[in-house]
Image (cartoon, rainbow, N blue to C red; front, side):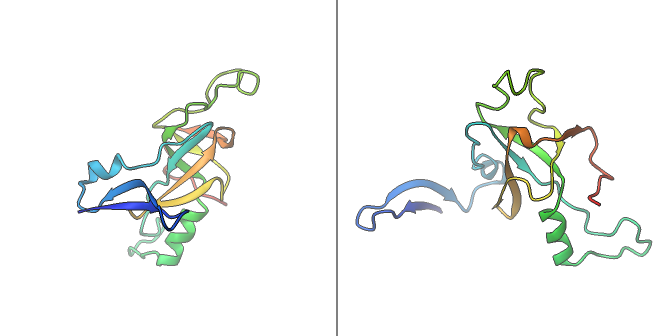
Length: 142
């Protein structure tokens, strides 16, 4: 089943701007991610651990705690980069600060938040990247 998404700026003549296939496989759904434009970077939020790490009895986090961790996360995974990312040599004289597949650090609440297929993503500006990390496990916000 495919559902078309209509842009209803004119109720008499809406135009189709995209489609969503609810029966798509996970791989097909992955191809439905938005492509960032200009100098923007599409980032995924790594999944938070469902248990508190210091809990010896396997204490599970509440849903609200999980939402707060996603909202305030400082670690993102670079999924895609717009065509103008890091193209300004005066602003980025040493080249790109990150690349696709990197884990990066940003400030909490950075970028535009969106949810796609139940997962949260962010679109950030290329100059919002504060660091690249090899292994984000163990990095927490204070």
